[in-house]
Image 1 (cartoon, rainbow, N blue to C red):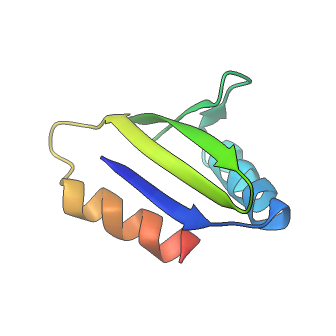
Image 2 (cartoon, rainbow, N blue to C red):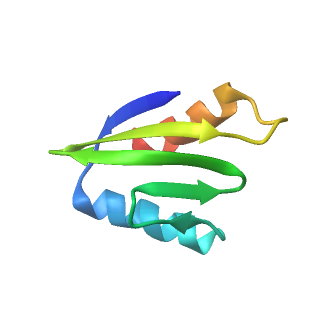
Image 3 (spheres, rainbow, N blue to C red):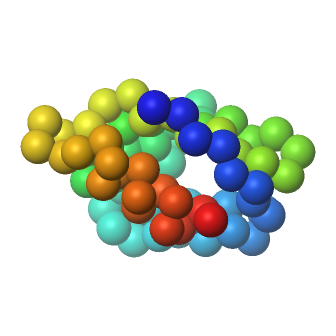
Length: 73
């Protein structure tokens, strides 16, 4: 699943901080992991594309998408 959102540098830095505060990791190769959700992101201009590559078995895609929308929209 891939989603693209408009984003400012401030919002990106806030997202990075929230991931780390919740025990997650943001890596220099533009990958992340938090709560068993793994993926990658690409920043381009004023937008960020987030691709989720792995999720916990019991987590629904709709729940993950809703959380992304909640934060980035």
